[in-house]
Image (tube, rainbow, N blue to C red; front, side):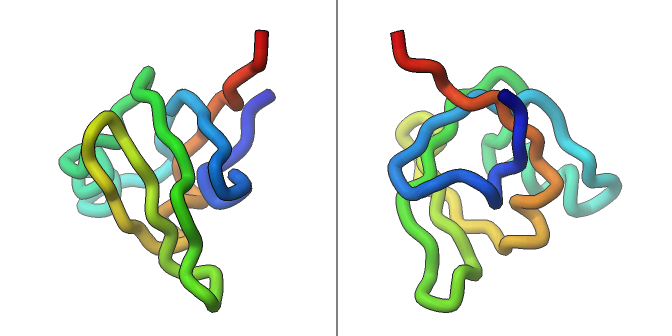
Length: 79
């Protein structure tokens, strides 16, 4: 099932599928390591639900909710 990063629950993992952002925002997300086919996990949300902290590989990344809404992910399936 595909969704956006902003819809993940704390502790939930997914694989990045694509970006819907353009320009500087897209480049910033790619520079932070949010590259298609990368595994990502939601670590925590700030008390007011913005920003979010994600784990990408061995790196922690903090992005705003509006940026997280532009990243499409495939939810990890349990086998």
